[in-house]
Amino acid sequence: MNKIKDIVSRIAPEAVFSESAPWTVTVPTAQFHAVAQALRDDPQTQFDFLLCMTGMDWGETLGVVYHLRSTASGCEVVLRIETADRENPQLPSVSDLWETANLNEREVFDFFGIRFIGHPDMRRLFLRNDWVGYPLRKDYDASAEVNPVRMENEETVDVTPSYEEHDGKVEQEERVLFDDQEYVVNIGPQHPATHGVLRFRTSIEGETIKKVDVHCGYIHRGIEKMCEGLSYPQTLALTDRLDYLSAHQNRHALCMCIEKALGIEVPERVQYIRTIMDELNRLSSHLLFWSTLCMDLGALTAFFYGFRDREKVLDMMEETTGGRLIQNYNVIGGVMADIHPNLVQRIKEFIHYLPPMLREYDEVFTGNVIARQRMQGIGVLSKETAISYGVTGPSGRASGWSCDVRKLKPYGVYDKVEFDEVLRTGGDTYDRYLVRVEEIRQSLRILEQLVDNIPAGDYCVKTKPIIRLPEGNYFSSVEASRGEFGVYIESRGDKMPYRMKFRSPGLPLVSVVDTLASGSKIADLIAIGGSLDYVVPDIDR
Image 1: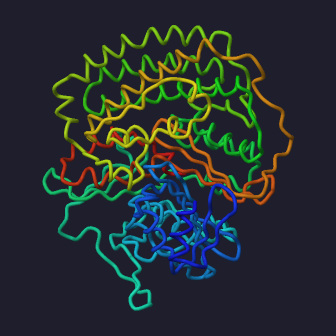
Image 2: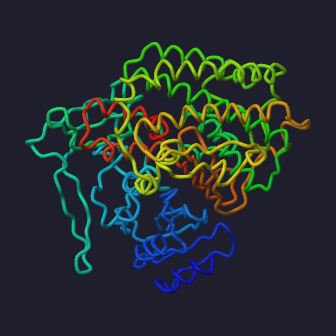
Image 3: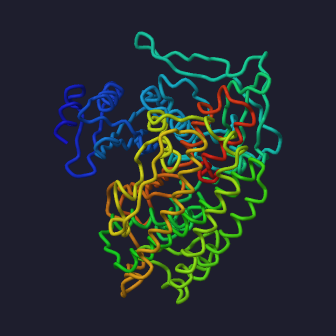
């Protein structure tokens, strides 16, 4: 912390430091970009990973909270910046420092109206171009008269505004995204290979991709806004509706964040159960990934193999949780009910059943010459680019980035089991595929160590009927199936959160598509998207 203080104080003497962890620094606007760049570039701090970026409305001021992490040391710091100008709020962009800020800043602009000076493309990301107002502001008018429902097609805007500062004066500049000579096709929003309601406007020359412009928001439900009007137990159900293939893991992150804020120590039995269910959830997700990627590349038989085995995992989870896709199982202080008497035996049987099936997967698809030609050398993502875009999870580890939260910041009982963090260095579509297949084997290894050692005890601790978090800021994250899923809560001491932000692992995945696909063939875009394995409701929160 002393080194961080030295760097920040040298550049911004008026910066304000918090007295407790997580270390939060409020930085004046004029010096913010210089501070952020110094913290990223200094070899002793090296905050090269922008983990989470949260737009805020504090009433009199608007601003942003940045969670930074050093991939070298694991050290974290929180930067805070604000502006008192609510009519024309402007803050410096950090999209030139971290690529992941590009879409994140567009999201903040979309919902808070903050324009980022130096950002190359200040268009809305999720809402219509003609939307009136900024929904996550506290004074937002949500009446139908302001934004009536429109059924006609939205006009596509190819002019991207940006705001640049010249001689102390901010001037608006424009550039054309696609010129009249370019041939632009729509892939999605109703294309099966986009795995959801996602639209890629793709400029092509022949079969070669020149540029991909992602359009989000077709199924945006305003979950973070909804959370501000719900009690903390009520917010839990919304996490299952984000990445529904990581429903249990998402809910685990929110419960952990609330429990940390309340100082609740959950029983050891709960920690074992949560970890087991997390790994079952990972198995079901990775099996679906394998099935759908194989289908995208033409291997329909493999699709049926994967879904056959995934059904066995869903049957186990359903017997205990009552749900197959949506898992309403984790609650504040524990789990909803104890595990089913059959669960332990069924997991043991599955641990012996799946390895021979995985060998069959390799025979059917992994070693297939056509599959390898479609994946090897396609969509190469370097380690440095993965970190800059915040591409965590299996996609980041396929580029050699050690980013597994289970290893870096163990939760549950991950510190009590032995498993390998699966890393590869090629960073192509094939490596992203291989990482997930190997992670299936590692999940089986974790389950084998836990299933016979679940301790006796309570499956939940009693909590007050009305839960109020102490005033403050809280952040927790887990290793979800597609990467690091984080929850940020700002509490004013009420029974409802003042602000709840979900760090989506899917948004960085979709943000890197243009980088990976440019220069490739149209068919390669399908393979690249399938290997990234994004889930659209996780992006459209």
